[in-house]
Image (cartoon, rainbow, N blue to C red; front, side, top):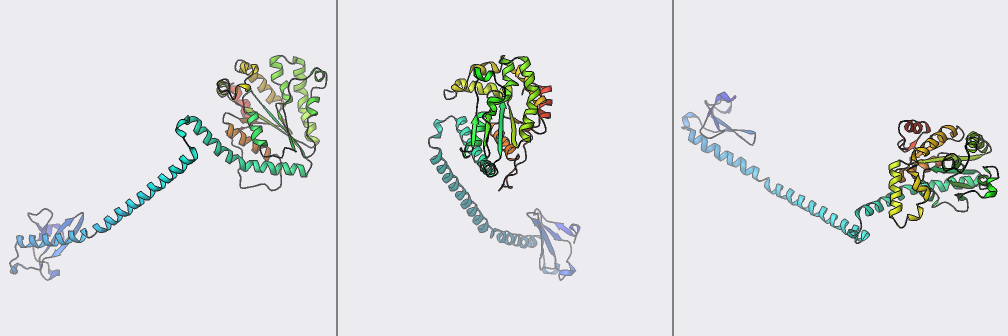
Length: 375
């Protein structure tokens, strides 16, 4: 029946059929809606039974109340759900309280610490854990070189405070110190000044199964020496012409040569210098050369550009590592080293792909330097 077949009553939402319905024994029926549900009730009366609207209304209200009562029986379930939710919330609260107590037990009286220092310390723990997987691979690589009597040279170049020393320490932390050496040469002696320029470096070269890490190298003559007048223009030019052939000869004779340039931005270098000055534990790192590094930034940029352009080669390419983020720089530098040798037992579940935001090609670095001298 359509709504037009019903007659509206004085009770909102309640309708009674205008005529007896043949399908239901010629009885009158009524309908109403409750909570968007439509209910139809056979009233059980005919006109002969003396059905009145009031009688129908009373019957329908009684029926409606019975419907609502039945739906009210759901309430205990609702209560149970609420109790269940409260139980879940209490369980979560207990869990948070327990975790909080455990963290306080580990951190101690952390409120006395500078939040930035605390956050930095916690981040270092995560960084060290991430590095460990790759440090294990460095040990495997070292064992491989020893077993095959192979020689490796790793050159670390970059401006002052670019992160070379920290990277070297992270790389060698777990390596067998019998099979690697860190070389950081100072000013040449008067005798060394009269020798072939490369001689004092060659004397420190690795033997079979050994790795030598140069914290600055013969590339001092490409950048530092000409800027501070420690060599003549002619000596600088001779070096730039000879170094590619020198390195090609090394590689041809079986040397594994890796050249890493740590590229720090001018702003980050200044921040690190300021920290060295302010921190008593780092003040020893700050030197007179450091004081001039910012003032001579453009001069170093020019020499850096020339060095990268003229001394990268197929046999001994430069690997540019953006080092404003020390951890990412160290991780990418380790990847470069691990990818240079096909060693035994490599863990292929690790990610050896370069992060292109950190591990920059020479061409991309040169292009960036043509646009800006920020690096």
